[in-house]
Image (cartoon, rainbow, N blue to C red; front, side, top):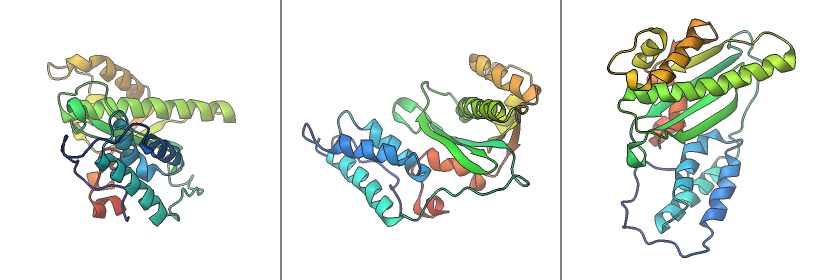
Length: 233
């Protein structure tokens, strides 16, 4: 298979449930282990994991497709190169798909890079319902920044050097404005604790936001099942 998944789910009740003790959990566990070095399957595996309680025949076929994709693409590997002159020491790309998960949660993801080399990534679902795209983007930005700051502090401790600043690549203008504008309004005061924490990091110079075009937001691959041309790009 040229991609690990295709957009669209089978409607509930249209696929028979798998019998007890089926190999579904074993396969999903193996695929989860593969995400350690294959971030391109992270969102497909995350969706497969979410179906573990009552998997169906359609879920089994979807998991097998991920396996077939890995068989099709054994030469896609992580490559680490020296790019210190052109890349920030620590950066993170973060993106979210608003209300595309069960119970109107939002699926988000981020990838943290050290001198342009990917070392940490996640594809998750928000634990709360976000009332707007900007709120969902801000939620994801906070989680991505926390992981990037942890890594920055770790590198500073290992190298006995100052903590490097973190560059956050974000494609949502409203999220960036909220992170840099010291105003709480009626539209965002319900998540002001997250706002003030991230603003504090920005004001101190520890975190810097950079807006990127949506078609250059590499974290988009962690938020949803993309159409084949977009995924391959």
